[in-house]
Length: 470
Ligand SMILES: Cc1cc2nc3c(=O)[nH]c(=O)nc-3n(C[C@H](O)[C@H](O)[C@H](O)COP(=O)(O)OP(=O)(O)OC[C@H]3O[C@@H](n4cnc5c(N)ncnc54)[C@H](O)[C@@H]3O)c2cc1C
Image 1 (cartoon, rainbow, N blue to C red):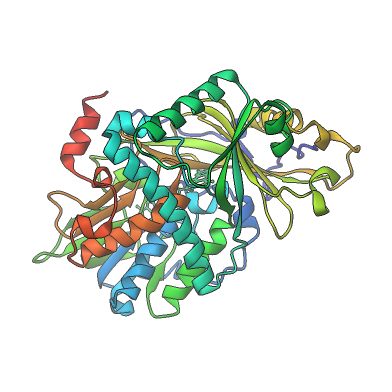
Image 2: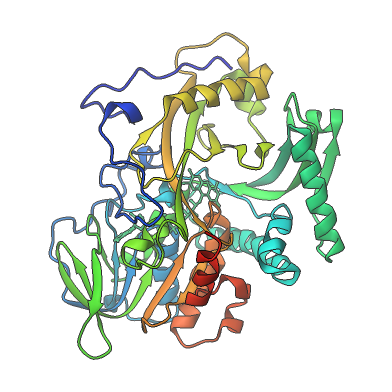
């Protein structure tokens, strides 16, 4: 595909700040934490939902002096936690959601739009970190979660461009093809099921995927989604039932209050709360300093939106999603939106530890444009039309935990505080079981009741094991 790169952004224009154009804080040492940067850039998902009525809700108002439940963060984890609390019968007036920037300004509004369970691929890594039994539970959990997202969207008829379709893991290098084969063998030997998974080699892999250099491809069911529309729908639903929502209102500290209450400090006042849920993704360390960047590492990923040419338009639009793998830490994520045909192409290559979601790297834009053409040579023809090609580039943070799985549950020594964060770049799949799990725990149920893998449970002891690795 002939892709046009955007003009370099001008000062004051609505385009992105290129990384080298504005002074930026230095990258954080591993002990550093940060509040969200207020000037984070807009993603394709943000740019297509600017009329969300609660985008800047209560921006300049003082916060209420008390709320029984405070959820910090308005991403999928925060929004779904609030939704499930109301479903469990909590009085909406006693529930307050705090968001540091505009609504859904974190990763839930800047990801690659994939709802893609890890059908088996992460098994060996999970087994090395947590043992075979837990690894099997993690993979089972992934598959269950994908169904939960579909069920939730259909049950509530949520207009979020949800589109179930097959996904391909496409291996472009022999190293990745061998790695996937080994993973599958270990998964099956441990008793894992490959129901619904298909595999292709050589020419068949190329034909099925359309990828010129595909060596092998593995296929299973997945979906694409507009993640901001989904999250905004959940926020609207709880706000319209009476839940309070404050945007541009970061929680800057939590201190002990009267009795067993906590004081949640914000620039707009202090809220006395009984229960707090930290749904703050890579930023959790600001309020929970034990989760510094060595145990919850903010890695920045860059994504691109591309207006397709004829090769991916009309009846030629992609019927599947893909992860295109060159190396363990170097792959590309690809989906095409069902409504406007926009191609979303993520360069899943770590670009450093940072809390900065405000800029992008032009060399990664160049790489994305080049790689897209290399992967799908047909997409280079016919010659470029004005309006086709690169639309936008943005960045977001994935929150990596030291042992590959999220932190979920009560926080030791801080009674009444809970966490649901650290989804390792995979939250669209994971959060739909973790957030309901946290709600069950808050309401007095046991870990067993949550049906989550035990290794997801937050504990200081788990953090200590992680610290020993550094
Ligand atoms: C580029 C990219 C691509 C990705 N692609 C995929 C994908 O295709 N599929 C998939 O499954 N996952 C993907 N992910 C991961 C997925 O987006 C995340 O796992 C998920 O969105 C995390 O949701 P969350 O609610 O935990 O965090 P967020 O959506 O980041 O929400 C946290 C919110 O908390 C707010 N906040 C933080 N600190 C404070 C504070 N002190 N006070 C008030 N508010 C605060 C933030 O501003 C933010 O809005 C991707 C992530 C990125 C960055």
